[in-house]
Length: 424
Ligand code: FES
Ligand SMILES: [Fe+2]
Image (cartoon, rainbow, N blue to C red; front, side):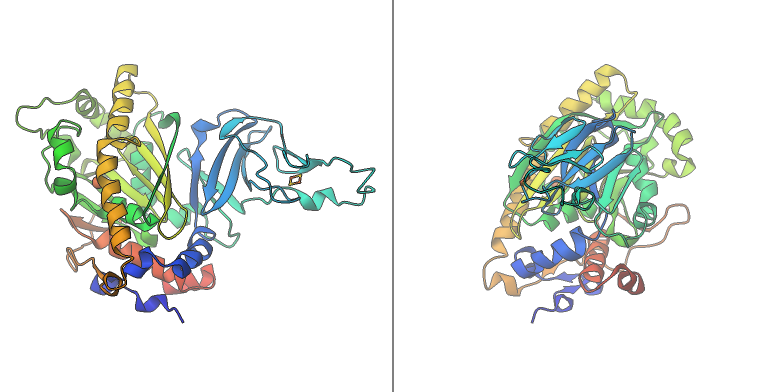
């Protein structure tokens, strides 16, 4: 009988490789993590008008996110109540209603079943249409333009779920007046890796950067920063974590012989406004990379959701987001910067994917699987900070990953949110 408590020892920095390849664990994750937690669904700027919709997922469940005719954002399981066909097969668009292409049941953009072929003649008006609307996502809420949803009506509010991470998340996606917007479409690709490798890489792995990405950085595909460990990591309750720059106002490091880039110059130019907008704490820290547990990650100008597709498969949905009121030429630069680094063929993306694919594959070997992964970097050296929430660590540390797996364990071993709260 599988007991995940035997597999994860966050306080010792040990995690079993079985977490990354085992089908039974994966099935339990779909129930206890994805169907229970708040999942990222998309950005408000992708559906600005009444009737706008976009496709998304929670775990392996397809979800349709719709701004209804009154402007309210709702989300539903994107599967027909009759026989399960995908109700909306488009990625995005605008519609007052959705007609299933199998037998023609039609749903309004508020999820109600409004049309059934043969309702009079063959159902004899006996079908209770009120009962057969689309299955709603139990709670939907937005945070600085980011739309999240959970299938669990007993989940804590989004605000509570994000907790202290909200402050850091807002500093990423709403750092100056006007906030952010998502530009361009959704990039999608599939990687042969477990979703947690990606989530934990963004939650707090800056240890890999000067090794994995050295060639991309030297070739000028980074913000021209000298690769190194000048970083501050923050982890918060509930498994969220961030990597950022301490004292961002002093950030003028470049590779010898390289230029201070227009994007860096723009970042310097908004430094004062950023501080006014976010508060004085932002002088001390600028989060630049992070994960909101379980599967929303971000880095400069890219948001991505790691959609699980099996223990050894992850579909990535990635978007470019930018400061809405940045000058157009800077936005263009940022967009290219995003694509060169974190598009599907981006240099950093390729570097990372290669690591995660091989760590997944090598965890399948029956002998390899007996040997835990080591998450002991900086163990016991995380600390509280007077002005910044959460636990902090200088330079590279795996404390955010340790806390992420601690949270994973709490969720995987609890039958309800009340039990999760009792374990926290
Ligand atoms: S499956 Fe949708 S109408 Fe039959
Ligand atoms: Fe990386």
